[in-house]
Length: 193
Image (cartoon, rainbow, N blue to C red):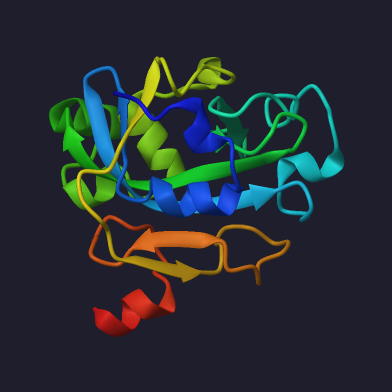
């Protein structure tokens, strides 16, 4: 059973941490969340920082919706809208550990190694077949489902990657036990490897 709306209707940072270990399913494919980043309208790396626009309206809408956008005009990136309606906040799903539909993921991605299938936000949407058309769809009742954790991950926190603004904020959450986290790994993971 999918996470309910209440799971998303709270601090974006709590949701980002609590998504680690959950499962994202789309069709025949699924993966365990091993990396997330939180974004809030009060900091300039968040799309909601510019205010309400046609592009950002989903971010200000009800929690539990998918915010899917194009990055560099190439990759669709999946985010979970959080907090109360009117607050622009979302969690970027950065990496998954594949668990179902690996053959289909391999065909979509054109790579063989499981560690390369979903170890980045553009990779995972390609592997799961998530597209811009899913923007605004419900994460509670599909077509993209977010399912609860099966066990407790070992979470490490670090600075967000792939951005140029507010890079110092420690709003990246990773499962320290997973080799599927995108590079560069947080310092705590590098020292343990």
